[in-house]
Image (cartoon, rainbow, N blue to C red; front, side):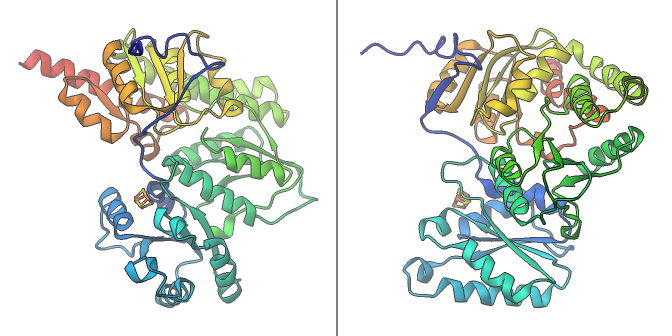
Length: 428
Ligand code: SF4
């Protein structure tokens, strides 16, 4: 058998016909999403039902909070539990009772499944229903899976939001309202809130809300728009509950933010003059801020490994607004409906791969010899050791990147490693 032509394996692929690979992949599990979700929902507690490995991952990834009351923790499944010698549901009830009696500030308890809880088939949905009977209405108990079995870290948020949507009250009578779906930084959310009000929109809400008591109702007059592209299951659940989707690219960069806001404005009948007057200054600021980094990024060849599921949106931003060349867009899953507005703005010829066979992709990347590699942390350091510039894609979910005022910061995230390497080369 002849060796595969690694250099060209993704060439000829496209959004319409991506290279699909189902080999070994390198991604964080869905538990990682708790790191940004627990900061977002300020009265929720995320109780991981998992192993010591899960607890170590969370402690090292999120840092141990010494002075604050933590808002996530791990109920450890030990050998007795794994051997079936203990009643897991009874043990879980005891842990939850202890936690809730010590922490009256918790209004929503989220049971988060892990690989071990899935392997022993611990039914956390049933546990949540049982605990709700005891603790509702003062506290709500939800569950979702953050397991790393065949998932990637942003799916943790997708699973959590799906659980929230299932829990949203139904309404048949509310006026047409807007639901913005996907965790953004508070600062970006506040900026969008001001823009929505200036456009004359009053009836809108964000999911996840900052407090569990602010979760809105849902019905046939709900229009939802995604602020994160990786929310496939959440979107399906919203539509099952009657909400209708507003289609747009993600609000990243000046162009993405304008197209996203315009899609909302068109849905709610905002006049063009008003839209232009309200968004004009922000657009100009965003363009100017991004232009500052154009020299560093223009013409640079960028390879995106599958990690955050934000890859098509980031590739669109880098190509359209900074003039970068995209070598390959790798994405763990290709949500065709959600990413199509991004691919509509990219050349048809851009190579796209879905899933991963990590060794083959590494060889493909080495052969292409890009200027910048956007990848997970596990690949970043080895690539750096080879003298290549990298950017960890997990930073994209921890940094404020949405909206006009963050467009410059988004460009800077990718320019910084290139500028640093250029400075090192001058220095040596
Ligand atoms: S959920 Fe699975 S992949 Fe994630 S830390 Fe626990 S054991 Fe590891």
